[in-house]
Image (cartoon, rainbow, N blue to C red):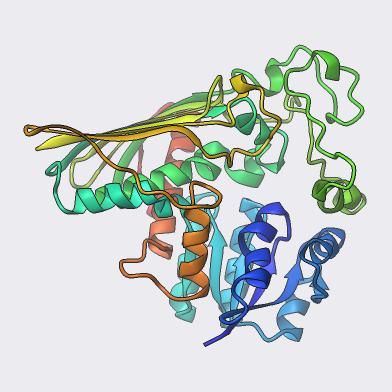
Length: 413
């Protein structure tokens, strides 16, 4: 049955993850009936980019009243997810929200309470699960190829192109995003929760801001017109002539004063750019996780040690800062990717399945799952799974702040 969708949050991610594919590829099963953004100029720009003439709103309640909607797609700032999820549920609508679900345990509690009252569905687009290699790892773990999982060592490296971009955007302050422990690391925490198939128990973390923000020797309001651009390694021209960014952001600044190219050395930045997180699960599995947002090259390293063997995964992306590529969005294909299985029978280099599209091919697979029908053993994250990912990130934030371990059960209260 064809469903009607309202997109809330018409920035670049909302347009390219949801709106454009609906308009171009999923007409038979999904209909985009409206665009809502607190910045009306951005919603109008989305119409232009999509080449549509959809109703646009900066008033969510008005959109809900005037449009026939089955499901609301939430792609706003992370801190605003809770508002639109709860309003949608109370209006009797299902919700598909960009990850993370929200930014802390208190917001999780509000969403869960409303979902139980309304009985409507909430799904979280943890797209990392849909990467073909991650689905292969999940399958191998479920089949017991390495026995019972004992330990996971997970390291994420964001280079000075992709990593720096979080310090230009609204993510740069915790009140908007919960910091990278929520916004970015929810990818990884959710993936490990999915692999381990258990609930996290206790988290201890450290983190700091060592490259961006207060560490700059000079600063400005933004890259555009900055007097220091010739000597700043993070300078970027975000608004070339006739670019999409001009319509979505530069020409919409008069409405909300949001600068898409804000200075990465701004002293208002209060999120960490490096963090280490240790935690364990109810089934005894231990995790050592790290994130850096200023590395020379971008990639991920995962080691999963089990009672009968070991899996090692690594990837290096070809959008690395060291390569001098002109990009500010880490969606490039992999430069080198490998998955190796170690058991008593020897060492085996696994053949890694491939898929076309952004985020390693995960986004197109996720969209098919949402807009057409659930695939067998669908990895689409449920509300409870979305909550578990946020709780690990929130616990890490609280541990960084207090210097003490944080129990997940205390956050659930």
